[in-house]
Image (cartoon, rainbow, N blue to C red; front, side, top):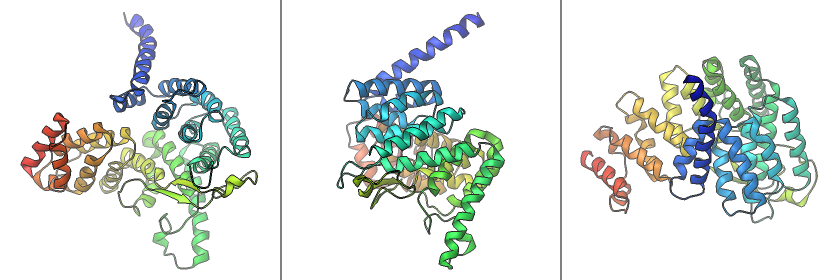
Length: 383
């Protein structure tokens, strides 16, 4: 019987993936489908990457939605071939999340040949102008994703074990020390303050190291102690998007095209949420873990927010230190996050629930979603 059940498992997983991908195409249930796919892991990422490739070739209107979901899934080496085939065929809007998904996937790609293929493709795409904004008035994330991918490749190629990742972090620290030395007015305790000074590419290196440290499990604790030195300078808040004046920063463009001089958008905080996830999972210091959890409650992706809210419910009460960050979840665009935020606040004390803005609760109570209204009324009664 056990052998029979094992034989059925791959077919069942394939069916679950197909159902979840179908639900991704619909407005209702999209967040739950994404959560289901993330739990399945690499196989789901590879399947969705192939679905996205097919959607791009067929010019399907939901290619963007599928690509955005793919960017939120865990990386998978098996997804790299489909991603490599898709990037040059995609519109600039769809290309950005594909490049992000490719960065996630090269971090877990053990085969050096596969990483070499990605590096070669990156150079070719940049030479063809695919890594720059299409016009001066329509900045995209293309160059940011190019820089992120280059740094992911560099970190991954340097090694994924603890000593190698610690050495890379030391190289980053030394480079920052050199920058600080030119100014001459940076106190030693501000060396890890990325908001004080820095250069493009550092945040992306730290993000890559954070992902690899998280994958190491308990062995990565030495690494997250260093990551916490950077995160302690950051206040928990929503993710920020910057617009830079040109694309040719962080890395040297392989060719001089007009697009290099077009503005580009930049995710400032992806490193922050990756570091917070690793710190919360692996650190043993309660204060650092609490600070990391506060950051995770502002993560832009649904999966991280849901996981963070579940972690709050397991966190020792009272939750007053998390109150403002919990309240922020009620303004999220995804209904599932709002619902989980309301459920969590419904378990909190009156001091914690008092941080929820009255107009936020009133909008939910007066809204057309009966379940959210009932949960909001429950909180209003204990304020």
